[in-house]
Structures are given as structure tokens and as C-alpha cells.
Amino acid sequence: MNTQLEKAVIDQLGLSYTDVNELRGTLKDIRDNGIDGGFGSFIYHADTVKFAEDNKSDILNMAKDLADDFGLAGAYSLIAAFNCLNDMTADSVAEAIHSPDSEDYTYVMNSLSWFAVEEVARSYDYE
Image: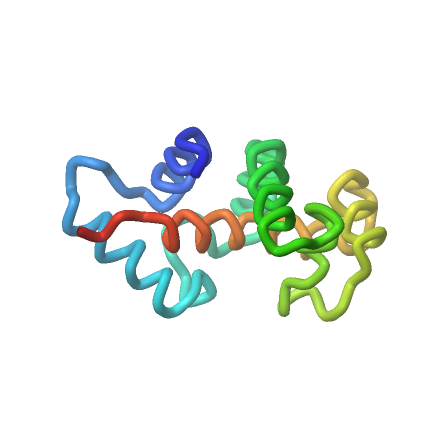
């Protein structure tokens, strides 16, 4: 896991590494139930889109690594397979990510933010 991305997620959630119980509890809740329950500043598109824009490189690198692990063609193929993206193609995902004027931009960037949070939650050590 990219520690810079992990820190960005923790900060956006409004959590602190010093409050271990709250940190673990929140990340476990996200891991078990998903981010769509509403956590920290990952609720409104204004916040999630900005988070994805600010961390796009790290998020895409994480997606590329996972795509490689799963034997997929690349990051955009992995992202296109997200259930929330309703069968978008890898090309349409790439276009949305790199074109703020795309009608799917907000939708895809929100998905990237949620993906980052859920991956951090899955990778966190709960012991």
C-alpha cells in the first residue's frame, strides 16, 4: 500500500493515527460494509472529486498494480469493472479520468475516491 495515499485517506476521513481504536473501527466498518455508508469527507462529490484529482497518480498506480495481480489489461480495465460504473469500457473510463468536461467525469472520479478508501481499509492491519 502506498503510504502517501493511506495518509491522504486517513486525513480525508478526519481520523488520526493516534486514536487507534477509532481508526481501526472506522476502517473495519468501511472494509465490512463499504464506503457508501457515508464516512468523513467521502460523501459529497465536491470532496470526492477533489480527493481523486489530488491523488490521481497514486490511485491509478494502485489500480495498475491490482490489474496486474488479476491479469487484466491495465488500470482502466480494472476500473471499468467496478460495479458502480455500470459496464463502462476501459476507453470511456480513461476518457472520463483525463477529461473534466466528460459527462462521466464526476461519476468516475467519485468511484476512484471510494476505491482508494476501500483498498486502504482492506489493507489495514487490524491486529
